[in-house]
Length: 430
Image (tube, rainbow, N blue to C red; front, side, top):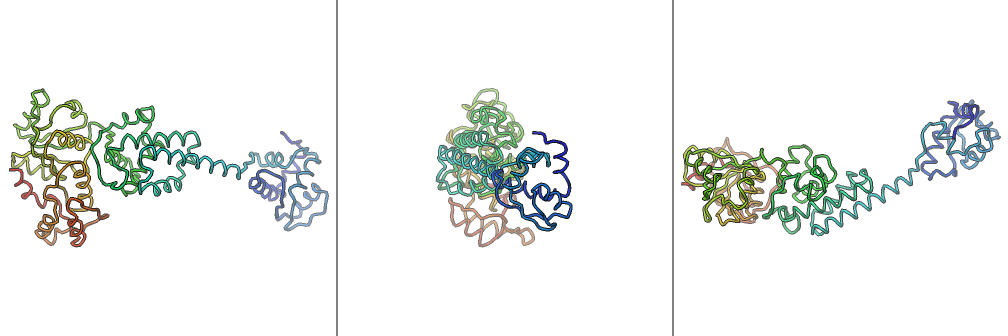
């Protein structure tokens, strides 16, 4: 509605601006109802204008104005409109029922959280110890509230579908969220298509992706990833590869027993003394039924590329794979296949907290410890020169394959990295 020009000019006087600001705030807090009282300070000009509007004497200073009376007088005046219409005309902005908006936001949040709870239950994770912290984090971040009711509910359902699909790989359910059981290695787009209906449903920045990664962070007791690289690393830990050609597994002397072209090529490279980088793309191209090693082969696995470099330099006859830290999807896929095919996969890594955490996940997947006992740690620590001893950093983690190892590491507080044990490890490969 447009107010008459004379009425609009009268009411839009700067002297009455404090009144309209106060009235607008009260209306928006009061479901847009013209009731209650506002207190406002006005000068002499404002007092004169307000007196003319209310048809009652007004003294400059702090005045109390009843909204119902003001509303009635406006309807009787030349404005011929109620208080809500006048406020919108003067301030040139629509009124907002803030109470209703808060209630609507709360309803949206409650419905979305209900859907998220149902999604977690559907994934078999309702009783996981990390779930309360995950839900609290989602609430505090306002992820579901900002998204809108329909979209938030849809993304909660999709996140549940993703967690269900990842369940065998991540083992996010109690009692042991550190373990990582065997399961499929997904391409991100493949997983997104299956669980969200679009290949881009888990792209960086999507709400579904944020919910899944927050759940994984809570389960693993790690910070929420805040950079693209850390998000990719967390996807890798979940058995999801965002890039099938970049992340690779370093191999030495790996000789698949088949007679197909790829197996022969790998044998030729081993004969030539060459290190081979295997990607998810190549492992899949070779075929899931292709044996990577003759069943029963002892396959040693290390964390640090310097160990594999030493193996290549000395041309040891044993088979050695290198994960280069936390295993990329190529490493996870290859180790799963080697273990499933009946090979003895033994793992050694750094004696620091991140290193034994990686070891714990791989051993839970079926690998066996390789020189990873408390005795091995103490022997390695005792040989470190004083100027090379580094303090342990990070959060202590359990070592279920040898509980004494975590105890001894915490007591000594020294990190023992693989390169300091290079000769010892290489002697096992001869």
